[in-house]
View (cartoon, rainbow, N blue to C red):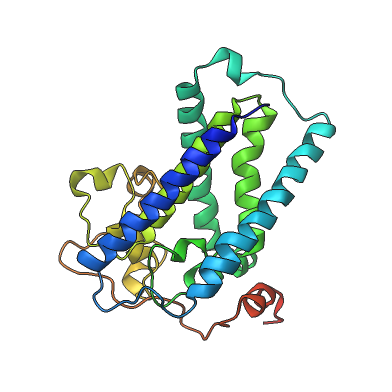
Length: 256
């Protein structure tokens, strides 16, 4: 699979521009007023989670996929010759979004899976950068499941690049501290007004709004929560959580 480097540069540029726009929106139309840009944990989330961990995880996932291919698990369907780029993207977009809804839901129900997910819920101020705070094991599982089928089924390499761009932009958007109403679109697409409730330390919203991009899964399977006249205001976990990146990594292995 050969990919034009310019495509990666262009999509990367789009992600950076989207981040800047979302940061500005957080200043002008904040969901929760008073949140700072450089809030507690900013360095960990931006440098160690977004840059360092994402880079290391990407290398690991690459070798995992190579290993699967060497085992003869490539199915030779050759999606790139049978379906258009648009059709391939839509197929893998919906397939992964359906998977991530259920895996996310199981993470909140199964103690072992919750251990690798709770870091994502530990931020007491949810903003555009909060989505990057995910444990290494969670990233390794989810992105392997996301990208391995694309390569094993012979999809066009551009699909993975476009999918990665959408993941990054949408992740920043749904976690952003922006007071944006999705209107009727909230029944189809996930936005900050619903996902901030998922991060809320509020019993009314526990085990709700698991969707990542397509909100339709929450409405379909009865896990949607959206109070029209109330806003989420308190975030984070009930228990005290380590602040440093290294402590957060090893907290998974605690005895209790």
